Structure formats: structure tokens, C-alpha cells
Image (cartoon, rainbow over all chains, first blue to last red; front, side, top):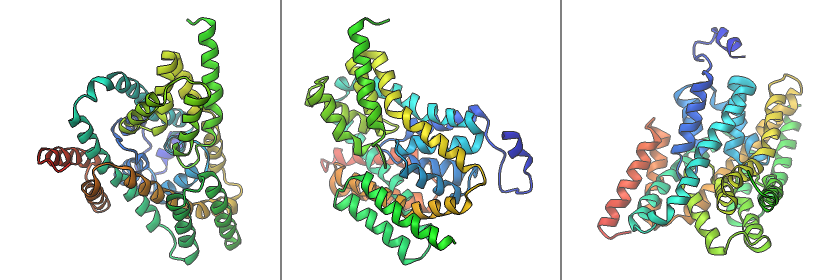
Length: 192
Length: 183
């Protein structure tokens, strides 16, 4: 699968697919440096903007599906990206790379926590890190919103989803089901 | 490796977390309340205070927030507890996304795929913005934190700077504010 991709030299914009170890280290690095969430923002930056292994279009499609399916989004996204780039091996690499290293870290942090939490500066520093990390989520959200077609319907769906989840605190499952159903049905009807 | 009580504990961890993995739509947040109820009220593996501590650690640790479950498994049943809980919360849905990714790579059903892709985009955008809004509400540090968050957002949108530098800057700003007794 990797070979088939590298043979496609007609598009000079697309660099050759990554190697397994390269992919593993990227997922591991992102998993270990993503404080305060916003992992999909990191993934977008790495895979689309820096390495250009996927288009923004492909990335946002995968992200939408990852969000609509059950399962932690970023794990879904890592499996999706891994599969796209390196087939089943990439999917396994995505899963292991995004889960195992931070799982080890959280256990270590849990054991260290009692000694760390004695210093108030720890909490202050983590708050600063978390505040800056919100930028990753927000810039991801703005990128996704700006990529929508400039039509009333998708924008209304986005606004309704936001209001239902953020302000009304409706259960995500039903919001995704209802908004997803209406929106996909509309898109299907228009595609015909 | 383990005696019988331990094995049955591992099986209960699996039985609690594997079904919960299926309700983690749109991120792990939706499952937290259920995890709390199961771990503290139903099974009494932890006290409420222990659970809140574990939750705080999962917020400050890097990686997916659902690793909270790994930490619970570790504290309840050691190494194998951590392994079993992690597999239970992340495993089942991985097969689902794998199957969908596989279907997507084939060329059949183009109209449905396009409809799903374009139809789910606005829902995803709304969910990401809502999650960000909730994060902004929950964060300590008031308007200083919000100012750092917005500055970081603008920098990420308009420059190619490494996000780690921004996080380092956030830490430095908050330590400076703390030194001036502002936070």
C-alpha cells in the first residue's frame, strides 16, 4: 500500500507516505505533548499543514466521521489517519501510539501526584498550559467552521449542535443522532 | 499471576468499562458521569474524593481524557487492572472505526459517502466549538486564562508556530502572573 502511494508521482504536492516507525513516533509525540486536550488540532497541524500527507478536506471528512461514531474521537482519528496512510499496520500504529505512551504517563503522574500537589505552583503552571491548549481546540473548531459551505443550512446545523451541547447540555448521543440524521439526509437529497 | 478474587475484579472492570466505551460519542466527556456512578456508588472501588483526584490528574495529563479509566484500573487492581480497563474503554469502538475506514477506502456507494461526509461536517464543527466552550467555562484563572486561550488560538490560525512553544508561553505567563499575585 505504501509502495502504491509512492509510485503516484504525478502530484508533486504529495510527499511519499511515512514509514511505520515515523508514523508511530509522530502519534506518540502528539499524545505526549497534548496537554489539556485539543489533540485533533495537533493532528491537523502535523498531518495536513506540516507534512502534507493528507488534504484538509480528507482530514475534516475523517474527523466528522470519528466524531459521529462512538469511541474517543482522537483514537478514532488516529486509527483513521493510520489506515489512510499505511493500511491495517497504520491503524494499529495509530491506536498504540495514541493510547499506550500517555497511559503509562498517567499512571506515573497518579503515583507522583501526592508529592507534586503540595506545591501550589504546579497547579498554576498546569492552568497556564491548559489555557494555551484551549487554543488548539478553538482553532480546530474555527478551521472546521470556515471549511463549511456558505449556505444557511449547514451553518444552522452547526449552530443548533453548538446550542444543544454547550448551552442546553443535551446528551451528545441524541444530538449527534438527530442533527446527523437531518444533515446527512439533506446532503443526500441534494447530491442526487 | 493472580488469584481468583483478582480475576473476578478484572472481569468486573471489563464488564463496567466495555459497554461505557459505546456511549463515548463526541469524546469521553459524556461517559464521565456514568463512570463516576459505577466506580463510586455501584462497585465502591473508590471514594468520591479519590475519584475527583483521579479525574483532576486525567485533565492535566497529556493524551485522551478517557485515560481516566486507565488510572482507575491501576488504582483498583494494579498493572492488569490498568491494562484491562484501557482495552475495555478503547477496544470495542476501534473495530468500528477500522471497519468504517476500510469501507471508505472502497469505491462503492459514492453518493452515500459524500452525503455522510458533507452532512456530518457541520455537526462535527458544532461539537468541537461546544467542547471548546465547555473547556473555557471550566478553566481556572478567569479572564487571564481566556486571554491566553484567545491569543493562542489567533497564533495557531495565522502562524505555523509549534504548539508546544505556545503551551510553554502559557505556563510562563501564569507563573509570572502568580509571582505578581494576580492568579
